[in-house]
Image (cartoon, rainbow, N blue to C red; front, side):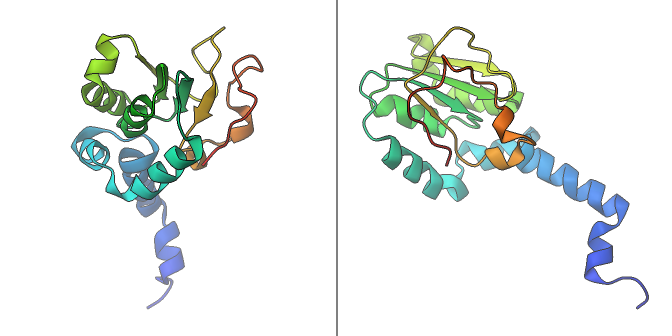
Length: 161
């Protein structure tokens, strides 16, 4: 069989590039038909969505920020839990389009703001949040400690799930 062990096969440069591209379009930066299908109804993320919402509890009047908002499921749930406003940041234009479609009513009433960007440079300068949350995305950030929240934007409590 030569040098075709599973380990060498998986680390083969062309195979690795193909694997990385698949991870990019389905998870790291979801794009295209596959990304939109996965994140329109992300059943695989439901447990973490429930955990985040349970941890957050009632958001009566809170201003919230979700980093890596994906298809907008948690944005929708935060609004339903009483948040006065929610901001969502994602680095995938396709995911922002899904968030916009899912939360069109909140966008129309200015309860939701969405921006394309990276967690290392939060685009809401001078705005503070009562709750900052994320689910299923920090393992894609090379340096989570470098997330671009300023001390005035960070609430006195927050947690990454």
